[in-house]
Image 1 (tube, one colour):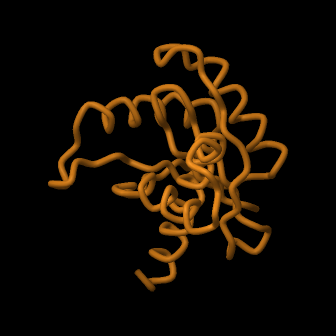
Image 2 (spheres, one colour; image 1 turned 90 degrees about the vertical axis):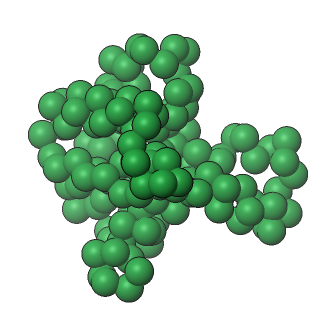
Length: 142
């Protein structure tokens, strides 16, 4: 089984998956949404990806405030996660995602990817970082 990582945003969802050994997080796809309040197609697409990759666990980045408290984005993420979990019938867990988008931007800049082209993959990279953080925390190496 693989683990899927998600970076849930208002207009996109970054998707990453582990390799079959659950040791590497691989950026996979960005799911684009027309409207933030329309989740049916987004959830359906993510369920399809989960089925095709034989995902046994989903890790969703929880956008906490820098203080550690939950704000509006965290509540929307929890709502999305609840709807997704009801459709998937596999465990869905959260991982603190503070600064993952910034970290993804830094990695892409260091790799020489022009800022204008970062938008295409930034959410997938953030999802991979969320997934890597989860894998490290599971191993106790954070």
